[in-house]
Amino acid sequence: MADISKAEKGLSQMSIDQPTASQNLIVVAIDVGTTYSGYAFSFRNKPSEVTVVNWENHANNGFSYKAPSVLLLNQTYQFVAFGYEAEKQYSDIITREPTDQYLFVKNFKTELVNDRGLQRHLLVKDVLHRFIPAHGLFIETIRFLRKHFLGTLRSRGLSFQEDDIKYIVTIPAMWTDVAKQIMRESAGVAGIKPRNLELAFEPEVAAVHCMHIPSENLSGRGKDLKEMSEPGRKFAVLDLGGGTADMTIEQNTLDGKIKLVHKATGGLWGGDKVNQEFSKFLRNVVGENIFNKFIRENILDFLFINGQFETKKRSIRKDTEGEIVLQLPVSLCETYVEGTGISLAETIRNSIHSRDISVMRGRFNISAEKCRSFFTGAIIGIIEHAKEMLSKPEYQDVKHILMVGGFSESPLVIDEMRSCFPDKRVIVPVDAGLSVLKGAVLYGHNTDIITSRPSPLTYGLSLYDTFDGRKHDMTKSVMVGRDRFVLGLFEKVFTINEEVKIGSKRSIGVYENYVGDSDALRRSTKEIEIFSSSDPNPRYVTDINCSRHGCLVVPPPESGWPDHVKGQVEFEFGATELMIRYVDKNSDYTVTGSVDFHLRETPLDLMQSSIRKQA
Image (cartoon, rainbow, N blue to C red; front, side, top):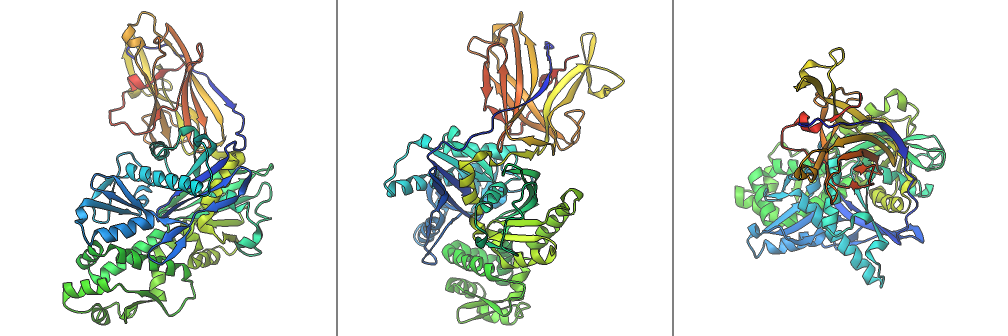
């Protein structure tokens, strides 16, 4: 603002045509989960015939529809293996090579799902507590799953051009624009072209899947989705994954589509929280140092006992009695004797845990009551959050709760939900753990099935105007020559919780004068900062609930900026992402897709960040 630009501001709203059904020959969905990951696909001529790939489970000599979210890297962070194969190779490596030459990372997404989501420079720990950049883990996981998918096609004698394939990558609905940007960047580095990629919110696509399955494949009173599928009907979707539990409120439209009524909210109450409680209990019984030594030297046995618990926990109910039996690795017993001089069985018999657990003939017996206690924290979080949301006056007419995600398959969780919500119909698909994958494939064939959703935040730009003491804060003002201006006025584009149709566009017009400016200035890059707020009506971009949300980087045209630049900053409410572009009205010069949502480390300079408000 050293040379105060002349600007005109105009707010307009328009809608683009709704996207048509997929023209790609094949749609593949990739789900990078907290505990398990996988992919599924179907062809355009038979979109509902979704293929979910089987993974060979080395530990149990069986197969599963998803592979563990486990990566094996070498010491320079180069990919070695993924999933069950990573578990097997790492187990072999530690018996013959120094473990410091490899990094073994499991459940890495757990550390990424928090209030701020995924951040570019976030570090996560491997099993030996060494730090690894999280961004690279997503790249390698997506790259592996894409490569495996292409190999599956080749093994069937099928060949496709890259532009024949549409990729849908699922993400938690609570993730921020920063997290979405990093996931998109990761997919790009992994080999997916931007034009062939779309991100999809997990609870939304899960609902799409459930709308396409027959009632006999559902678990619920009456086993019938007819009432829930009625036009105008609101319903809750409770997505219980490995890391998070989140709830959305959705509504059927009159034309058979779905709109999001309440954005996803939730917390870290997924199935992995139960596993963490079990692991914490084992550490307490065995001792921290001995347990860590056991993991370092016998990683496959550690994964094996956790895999057993993962399977057993799915059968625990409110009325389960007796004991849950796990095979106890010999290596754990030997490590314990080496460290203490006495057997683990004897220690347990003489401990405060003797009521809950016992060791006998290589078996680890845990009382059903103790196993249920591992669920307590997760279930309390889920129930309290669901009650809080469903108690709101505007959702009193919600009569159905659709449970999806792997943790929704837990009978104990289902029992507790039905017990705590006797006036609701709790519906659970038979393959709840695959609802996101299958639904994402269906969504990819028909992306316009989701019509609108509430704006997660209030978005806008920073404007400046001639100071008016009757309505402006003197502390926000500055003198430029003889004139006083107020800086940092928050000019809204979208308002938090406002229902916005997918594809809606709104814009703020900008005019700048370059007459008399140097060639260097004419060829300089524009940086237009985007701001957001949790307040529906923020006054200034420096208000307590406001923050810098991103920056639109606008390089000049090839010949530099002309004397008079008349353009607009255009916001588009996309399918899952906020898209921002700059359009020059005189030349149709457009810059899009170059928004950086990462937080800037430089101090906010309102003189540079504000554009002038039209009088």
